[in-house]
Structure formats: C-alpha cells, structure tokens
Amino acid sequence: MKPFYITTAIDYANGSPHLGHAYEKVLTDVIARFRRQLGDTVHFLTGTDEHGQKVQASARARGIAPQAFVDAVSQEFRDLLPRLDVRPDDFIRTTEPRHQRVVRDLLQRLYDQGEIYRAEYRGFYSTRQEQFLQEKDRNPDGTWPELFGEVTEITEANYFFRLRKHQDWLVAFLQSHEGYVFPAFRQSQVLEFLKEPLNDLCISRPRERLEWGIPLPFDDQYVTYVWFDALVNYYSAVVDRPGVWPADYHVIGKDILVPPHAVYWLIMLHAAGIELPKGIIAHGWWLQRGAKMSKSTGNALNPLDLVDQFGSDAFRYFLMREMNVGQDSDFTPEQFLVRYNSELANNLGNLVNRTLNMTTRFAGGAVPAAESAEEPETALRELWAQTGPDVVALGERFQFHTALERTMAFVTATNAYVERRAPWKLGKSADPADQARLRTSLATMAEALRLAVAAMQHVIPGTTAKVNAVLGHRPGAVWKDELVWGGRLAGNPVAPALVLFPRPEKPAAA
Image (cartoon, rainbow, N blue to C red; front, side, top):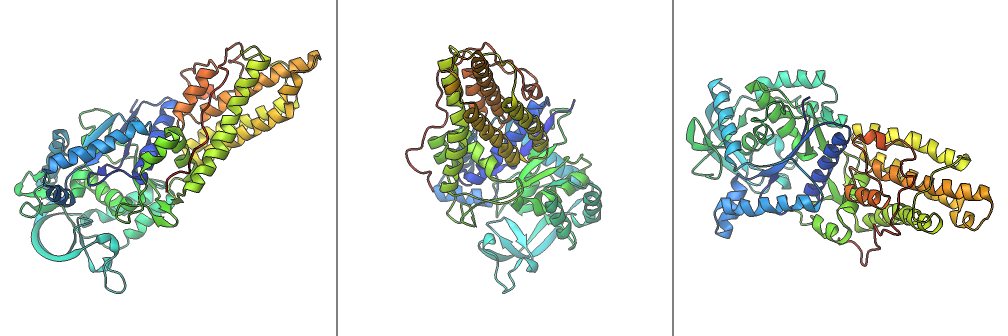
C-alpha cells in the first residue's frame, strides 16, 4: 500500500521560527498522527529552504559564509520540532546533494524538452520577495505594496520556463478536480487568478548578482530561481523511495498557494511528466489584534515562550482548538489562558483528578467493574456513541477544531455526570444498591476519561500517554477500537493523583 505522504512548506532559512511556522508543523503532525491511528503508513516531510538573495545578503552582513549562516538557522527549525512533539520522518535541506541532483536533473529535462528558453528581461524586481513584478502588482496610487519591500528596475538576460503554454491545461485540471485545494474557496481563488493570462516564469539569476544557488546544468553562469529550487524538495526527498510519490497533501500557508504551489508547482510537474500531488491544504494566518504575525511587522510570537511555560500539549491543543483550518485566527494571551484554564485545567484536568481521587478513596485504588446501567450512564454512553464517530469523520475532513469542541463537550458532560451521581455521597451509604451505583459511577468516570483522551491523542499525545499510564491502560493497536465504550479498565490499579495542567504563575507572553 502506498504510504500517506504529507509535507509542510520548507521554511526559509533567513530568520528564527515564529508562531506561524510552529502552527504549520503542529497541524501537519496532527494529520500525520491521525492517519497513523487510522492504520496508514505515513511519510511526513519538513525542512528548510536555504538558497537565495536574502540569505546571501544576511550572511555577508554577518561576515560569514552562506553555508554557515543557513546551518545555524536550519538547526533552529530542527530544534523546534521535538519541543512541539512534532515527529517528521524526514527533514530536507535544499543545500543537500540529494536535493541539488534532482533539481539539476529536472531542469535539464525541461530544457531538453524546449520548456526553458533564454531571453532578455526589463522590468521591476522585488529583492524581498525575490521575484519580478508587473504593473498590475502596483497599488492603485502607483506605489508598490509593502510586502515587496524595495523595488528596483533592472534589465538582464535570464532563463524562462514556458508557464503560459500550460495555463489551459491547469484550468481544465482544477475544474475537473473539485476539492483539490482545501478549503474549497481557496480553489476558487486559484481559478480566479488563472482568468488573467500567465507570464512565463523567470527561473534563473545571473551568478554575478546571486552566487548562492544551484547552478543551471545547461549554463553555469546562472543559478536557479527560488521556486524551481524550493518547490522541488517535495519530490527530491522521496525520488529514491519507490512508491512514496505522489504527495497526498502539501500543507502550506495561504500566502504561498497562488501562484507558487497551485500554479508554478503543478505546471512544473505536468511539463516534466511527473504525477501531481493529490491535494493541497492552504491554512490561514495567525493574527494579533487583527494584524498578521510576521518577522517583517515585528509582532511575531516566539512559540517556545508558550511551550516553556505551558508545555507542548497545551500549545498544540490551543492551536488546533482555536483555528479552523483554512481560516485566519486571532491570537491573544487572554484567549490562550481561557482555553488553558477552562478546557484543559478545569475540565479535563478536573475529571482526571476526580477519577483518580475517588477510585483511590472508594475502590481501594482499582477501577471497579460497571454493574447495571441506569439513565445517567445510558445518557453518557449515548453521547459518546455520537461523539466517537464524529471525531473520526471530522478528522478526515481536517475539522480538528470541531472534533476537539465535541470531545471537550463530552468531558463537560462527564463532569456533570459526576455531580449528578455524587460518588462522595454514595460512598457514605450502606445501601447495597448505592454501593452498586458507586462502583458503576467510578467505572463510568474512568472509561469516559479513557475515551476522551483517546479521541484527542493525535493533538495531545503526551497527555494521553500520562492518563493511560495512571489508569493502568495499554492501548491496543487499532485506534478505532479504542474509541469503543467498554469495560477494559476493570481491575486496573490507578495512581492516586496526576497534575496535568498546573495553574500558570503569570499570564502568557504577548
């Protein structure tokens, strides 16, 4: 069976990681874990994009070689992954020989096919975005949008890829593959973009202007342009792994959907006769009080500040709970604390403490077997019978925020069940019927807790492992079986206590 192959965008090695980078890694890791839970073999790729003019300029400004510069920055991104409990199967760097070989082979193939030609270009160039611009890119008042930074007019000979030649094919492909881009409205944006004629893509820079890049195999006086280098990583990383390509999903930010991934990349592959990826997931931006978080605007949040204070699971939970994949979402320290306190500490953490404490007090520290279920137990089981399948179905549609909402609603219902049953009162009763209700309520609490963390284990894997450990539970190999209500905890010894989400001593950093 072909592995489920999923990738993040590769991060540009010109600055430290921020919240947007962390979110994309966590989202992709959650999808990868979810697919593994469904029984898929998964190959998860991430990495760093290390060539280009900005890297060359930054290295010169520091007085070091570009390779030394990108080595340090790439390591920052690599070090972030275990801190977030993100576990890719491969980490690719575009300075690696395995990548450069494939890039040069692809360029030569397209050149031999007549898809690449040399021509003189005169026009405007954005150093920040490392791209040539057109008049239509200007603001209505004639100025250039801030995202382009300094724009200069240049004239030089370069190599171009025949992008325009394949425009009609791409339109027909997208029209016949509904849902290729997730969410669907992003695919509509791609088709809207394609209503305007495409220009052929400049794919080179002269070495006299940019040395830090992969030399063109057919003209070593030029290096290849960023997109014909960076985008190829998805393919170069697995070209020697038969059966892995094509990618099932590229997970990227919406800002690099059009034109890089949905236009350049698809046409590059098509022209080269390489099978296309099966889909693209374009996620939204994290905003801070309505403004995009970014290094250039100076409001980027260091994700490690939150991880150090609250732990990776709390951070992962907030990211998945707060953002609807594909939409933008606002980050505020206050909202983070609301989710942390109300949902993790006071709801899930409270259920953990109640279950362990009462099982220790009233059942000798071992989960009793449930006896005859009455209406309170039946109602909770019926709620789970809806919740469990919903978690699976929502995850398959990348609706993790809703799946977490439903799961947390089940935790809330379980805490309400505890209040209704009041085991602390049943424990004082000498009535045999009350003692049977006590045993049933303790078993019900433990089983509901086990199910709740099983439903969230791809989001909060560390918490799930800790709760299973204190319940004396070893999950089976089939995740969907773990979502079935049962009595598998009966007789298990439990730990007396577990503090999962301690109260923060200070607010989260802004």
